[in-house]
Length: 211
Image (cartoon, rainbow, N blue to C red; front, top):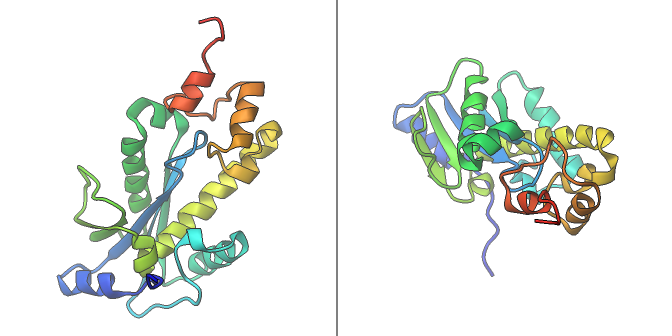
């Protein structure tokens, strides 16, 4: 059995040992859904900082994520920023470039700035700061895990707000992902201004049936 990954501070310590002072973990939420923005967060944690239960946001219940979200933003020693790219930007520049834009906006929102980034997943091309990409970083690295929670909770709240205006789509349940419920709602009601027209399932369902 593969041992369960748990986040630690090793990557942050290595970056500081290399001379970087403000090391941010960066993660995003919402690359895959058919609707809604993509949201990114950047978090700089003080050396030796700990928060019980901090882990990859995907492994946590919504209630636990929200509690950790509040603890992170309520700690004045934690420097954090959140940024997003809207549906229009996703459709205009593609999801990869929109995700990069959301990450840059998150970094720009961090008080005091950032020297170095630990990014979940693969390297980001043409990034404005030195970076290290870490596969499954949200399960390996404290600051990336913290960023994953801020990004996920922020985006979920956004989709829950959209659900109040478009209750027939069930955004509060699937958060815009292409579930059977969501696809059935698109077939029945069509698409909204919050759907990503550049994503194949949305584009195909938006075509008139007589074409």
